[in-house]
Image (tube, rainbow, N blue to C red):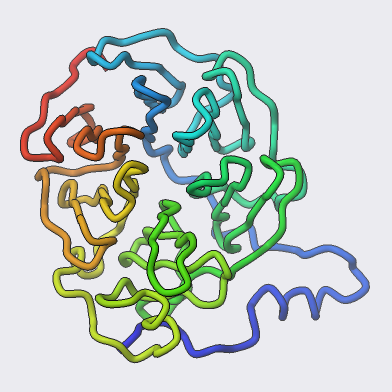
Length: 306
């Protein structure tokens, strides 16, 4: 049985209705104290980007490169295989975009509410389409590289409560009607929504669009550990059904869009990324140390210089 909440009046619609003549949405702020900044990883071509406070570029051989002059602390990163040099970064202060590999940045959060940005992604096949998950709020979308934003989806309902997405991944799954799915990692597990933004859905076997319409469908065959926080997600652009997830129990991998998962590394994993052209080349932060794998997680090399 799906764990998703039955269709109901959207929380944001309700809040907007009671805002009335005030003309602006007042979001709760008392519960949004910023947690410690998590590290983040993303590939920009062959180079690996590591955000841990600041932002650093690491070469294909694992050698540390230059520090990039990103404003403020960064807690989320996104890049796009079809647009080398494009880096989207979010931190406590702003959402910023670079189109020159991190040499210069522009603020791209106009129109977003002031809530903390928890997770970001750039849509598969659409490098000008961004998604941002905001704490205590929901999912926002921009189709013009962050110049304007619109609210598209409430937070997912898992384990009898709304949950903030902690990680986002845009996944190109050619099932049913085809199109892009947005996978979200939360403190209580994994969920997803198609880019029609009709309903959050458990990741289930079989045809994804049929599962979305049916509602009551078989559960995943070998899901991620129940109730464990999914801190980072990565979809391999060269093999979209290949996913990697960072959890407190380790790095997990799936080759079928998230139905069956296997543990690829043990230890507290907090970030992961996959190379744009090689689904077996993976980076992850495990026990606070950067590791690289060139065989899909079968073996790992610690990168002490990072």
